[in-house]
Length: 121
Image (cartoon, rainbow, N blue to C red; front, side, top):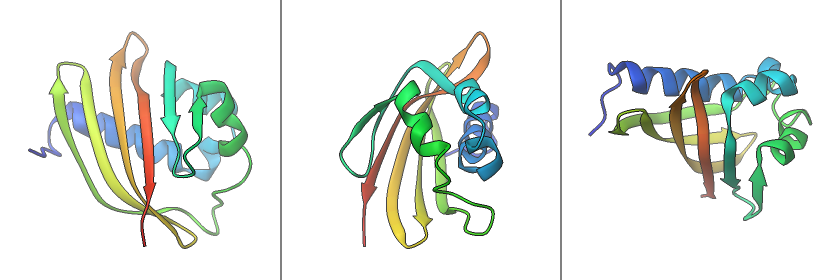
């Protein structure tokens, strides 16, 4: 069940979109503000990432203002109080993937706890 009007879902979507913003990605400090200290990712490549290692990707210019990630079919659901699951389709310069992330509410706000990408045609 998707409820975009749910404040928790809206907060998670806002955080997700900030993490896709080239200006935010260029700043390791801003990226780390959005990632949970226990963050892990299983990338579309199959590689496993943590909060520190993902900074090499986010700050590497893989997303630029001239070629932003195109997002569609974004939806979210509150799984439990303080836990939101998002899914969406992302196209990054022809590299197309289904994305899934878990956001959790912490003392400092909503932070991405887990992310996974699965390449698709």
